[in-house]
Image 1 (cartoon, rainbow, N blue to C red):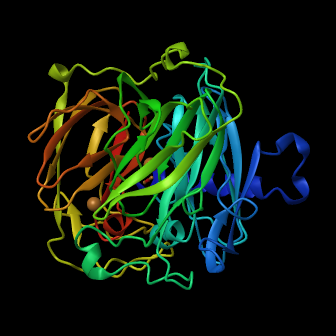
Image 2: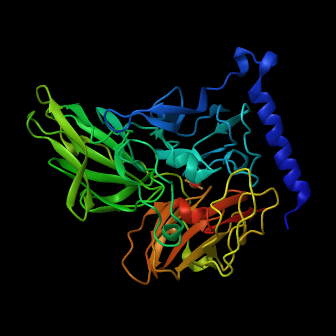
Image 3: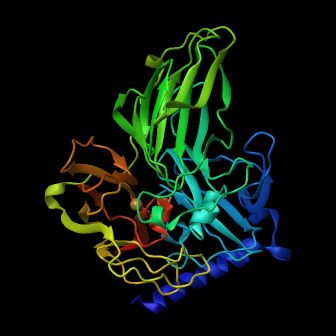
Length: 461
Ligand code: C2O
Ligand code: CU
Ligand code: CU
């Protein structure tokens, strides 16, 4: 069981922060946050000629605002819960202080309807990140609550502009209304897919871009389920970063397998002529499906990819694997199949999955023990063993890790926060446990996350 005094202390301070953010009469300009981020229910048109009812959105209506921060600089955001259910917001990939990580009970109390919570974020790394609720996560994300967060590089690499692409599905019928958000038999397998592919809440949008210019496309895969294969065709382009971390060797944007939670930054040299359109597509059984089109406009700026400065490496500490202790995690079926405990953050009613043979009970005030306790400042190898015939994008909060090796495939030396573990694969990653606290650790197929494939890792001094 958890040390209650520590948890009380932690939740106590969260309550203070809520009261402070609520402000009321005491609020003055001096303590206004950099941003106010309301969350509310809304109706919005996704499919032509229909209005989807019962969506949820960040901001003032429509797709989520892009949050822009600067590397190493403090950013405060007041999340205001205008829903009629509890929520909490997590900043996926940001290595922030544990009490700002937005996980119910592990790091803060859920934000009740009508309440607000001030998050103070000091992002150490630059790149493309995203944000989403961590309470009633399947319903809230499926209904729209996924947004992109950009941490600007300290030194500008030389793009003319960037363009954020929030890529996700919605599960809608032909009348534009939500279908049942999941099916239990799918939750026990690969997950329940959406029916409508969108980019920034639009079906196959076209973006006009200045001909011959250099554009940084920031792809964030924020779907609850889909592991997709994506290609950008029709232009000179290179993948320059994955999951916010620069690639030592940029690669072609062809057949990129990207899982829920992952990101890809692509340097695009827009073609010279207006009829040379560029296409972002998703591989399907029926062939490539266009997700977005990019159309050159005007006379060519005649720029070249060679003019871009390489992205600076993020300050993620290096690990000497020879000095690291190995910690094992096994991802598999839930041994009992018990129902999860009731929670104000919702349950799907089943546990199908487990980590180290323990199914997460749900988001409850006294969570089960951590899966591992790591010593702050020490190097570790985490060994992920997938016993199941399904792939799992495994995500750790509060840390980035380096891919080391797999029993199935060569792994590039990438630094990431979310790795796609293939079926029956054993894969090792390395990290320095440098951020103290209780860090959520789960599959990012949200039906898996919500039916047992969740736990947390404690880093203690
Ligand atoms: Cu993007 Cu714990 O999640
Ligand atoms: Cu996260
Ligand atoms: Cu999974």
